[in-house]
Length: 295
View 1 (tube, rainbow, N blue to C red):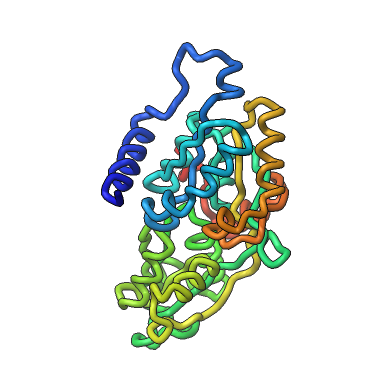
View 2: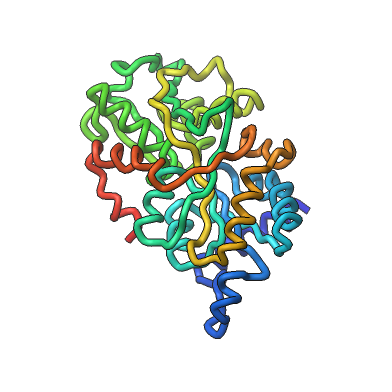
């Protein structure tokens, strides 16, 4: 069963990279606006097989509420997901804040909801250090290797790097920067000493500790960043207006714990593009050319 699931996910990734998850050339405009099947993309923040398996409840819930067939996909990395959105191959997508901003520069998509936890639609990024290496504050990071997730990750790249910059530490000059793809990979690298520090989403970090996937005796929390707007759910802008309203209502009214658990959420709240202007500002502060991520 697990082997078949993994094969299916690999097949989806290959299909996505070859552009097979797309509308046929003779598909009518109305079919594209109100398709029988909705392609729903989830971020590869953790192992793809785990992400797909954990979100079967979401798949069933969306199918029931929309009356559509639902296909969940997980891209190989953030850039692949951005590219798929830009080509109109995704109907719904759960982006990170930065990857949404990047996708928005070249895609006709719009955010409509974001994770709600403890009454807020923000979260923080955590900077962690390796206990054995005695990396427990910003001064001790100097000259060390710092691990990040995906280059287009908000909480596992943008905000940790911004925090380090504010503390006078610049990538390349004061520390070596490495990208490992996923948040859990960052935590494991820091725990094992392959990187002496790292940045990742605080909710994911706390979840890894809770599940005992990482050892709290081997990792120390150095700092948390400023609040970050939560991961947005987005949809294609050219979907049928009634379908868009149904999708938005489905998420805003969602209160099924079995569906919300993988998102570590209490629910979802309405969001709009302007809520992510702070992400754009953070990119500017670091001097990042956002276009280079989406070319």
